[in-house]
Image (tube, rainbow, N blue to C red; front, top):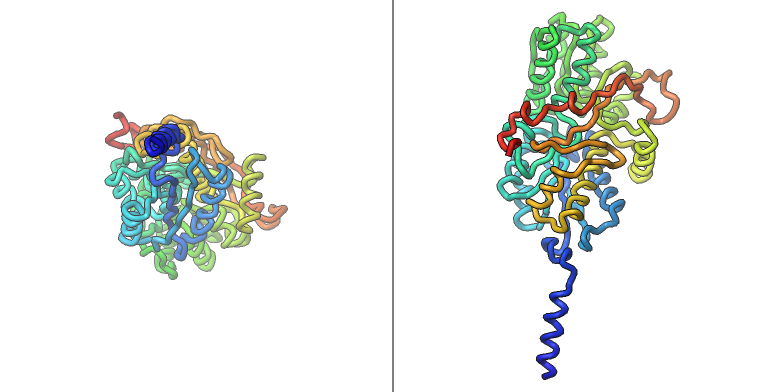
Length: 401
């Protein structure tokens, strides 16, 4: 009788365990931040994105539905094969539930493909190609911070309106560069401008002289730098050595963030027009978030790091609302829930793109800057429905389902 009672008590205890806890796989939620931590994009996202993710977990309380939340990270070295191996290991043997950040478009496309195969959620904050929510979209894939279309509309649009109607592109030779160049070229041509030429170069080059000289000799009014990270910074430095801007041509840094401006310095970066989805000194909410981020990193966040904070936060909110970390249920909530946090306000489209306002800025001159990290002056706000493609325009085959 006593044994029977104990067994019955154990069964009763099992039935009254919190249902929510039973719905969290492996008893924890594990998020992987996979990005470049040692190469040309190490400041663009890098370890600072990892800190943003950890900050989001801490702000959420460290748990969701009673289960602890863990952040793991790895350096993909901008190589799709390395990223793919890490992603498969994380999913197959390390119980990672979602992978985020994914700087470098070729990496992001590869990992999104694996995530789709494994029915896992990925949220891209560091890569730009519109293919992520276009032809290679996934019902479990989300794009959070910006894309090549938003950058083309922002920076490209500003310069066309200012008379920059002839362009020569210096393009990094992989998916991100092609997409950024193509999106900007389409925008320039649709507004009556023309593209007079293009030169491509390998990612991580250190000598841009021959590429910049071709651009200079083209006579184009605008030289579009279809690159990012240290590639952009080094391009701008070497362009100054050739007197390109002094000669009357404009430099369009098509993906240039606060991190690169800081690394380059205002003396070299002044006057550059750029588009970001977040600036630390925009309003009280952004300033509060940025100051807390600064205390742990000694730097202000750019839009990649801010978006990583937002993506982790929204993922945890979706799990909490769904009552499970099951992929289908969480993906459904991510598509349905509005995004409203300290870094962004927006909505997720059927193609997985998180649509939000983008902001056009011009880098201040040293004399215009009044305090540390005071780098931008606002030029315009680009409404989300103008900055991003609609699901119909994106070409995502599942967007209508």
